[in-house]
Length: 393
Ligand code: GLA
View 1 (cartoon, protein in one colour):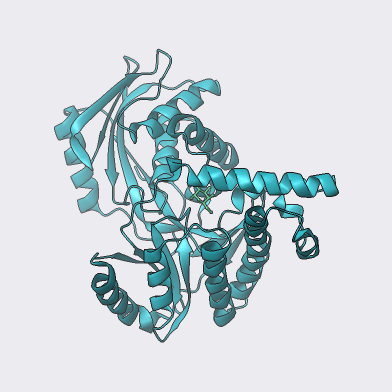
View 2: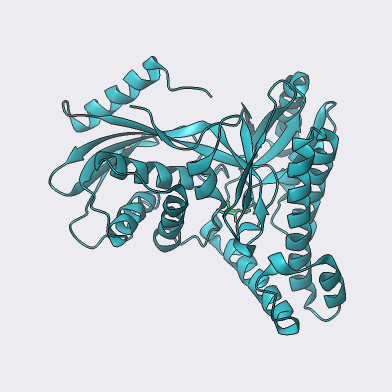
């Protein structure tokens, strides 16, 4: 895992003190971004996801205050100091990103946890709205700041649920549980097969000598609160309700078999049928891909990723021209096992599983061809799997 270097630590402390003044005990916390290798739009259907925590991360410098105020600055908007009090009801407010912090403070208080105010400097190296879960990183990191100041710890499942609730109620994004779980529970060198129904986590080694994970940001912004994400959730619920009427043992799309799906064709609204077909097939692909990676069957894992992209593009309809282009072009490079869009969709990133010696040619080819076709320079990240959020100092 890449550690926070002394130079970086000094730089964050420097930023903190020049923003909030000298003195006091300043703590340093980190929370990684995440990439999902496969298992998209399955988490809110009680299905399987297979994400890993990545090296780009958010760092937090915080110092307790005794007056109940939270004062907040992000490195992305260094001139803006945002303030709110934890002694009054915490309301949603502007700027939008501050709601992740407000939401977490409110949910901690709501859960009966005593917290204090703080000065908080957020150093963000993750693109906001770039599909690498900067929001979950801010939520989980903020929660760790509040908890660490009180000398408290929280069970990671509870922490993830609390942060998810903050996102639902303060950022108004009806997200699933994948992002907050991997940001808090990631393990160095491993991807995590997570069962969103029963909370089981299975860590699968990603052998760095044999495999690299390359993420390419299309630079097209995705806006999950924009309505399409919520609409997909609703369509999945509608599908689950249809199957429940036929068989009351079916609680969610997780329970639907391929046979039941096939039998529903023609009876289910065609759009809902397509959404269901994505979720049902994606769950199979996800457990199959985790097994393939465990057995080092990289070609098979890659093939499943390509199928996942096609299903997200054609059945779930959450891709876009830019992501399709990047995923298709990635597959033309020798040594690339698989590539697909990752995250909620409508922009954001693709993820590719790549032989180490193919990283350079992939990065070069995508940068060139994408610029030529879409006149946008993509950002490329080559990463290993890293650990979940932690206290650095
Ligand atoms: C977003 C949400 C997740 C998940 C993905 C799609 O990242 O935050 O909960 O639903 O989209 O797989």
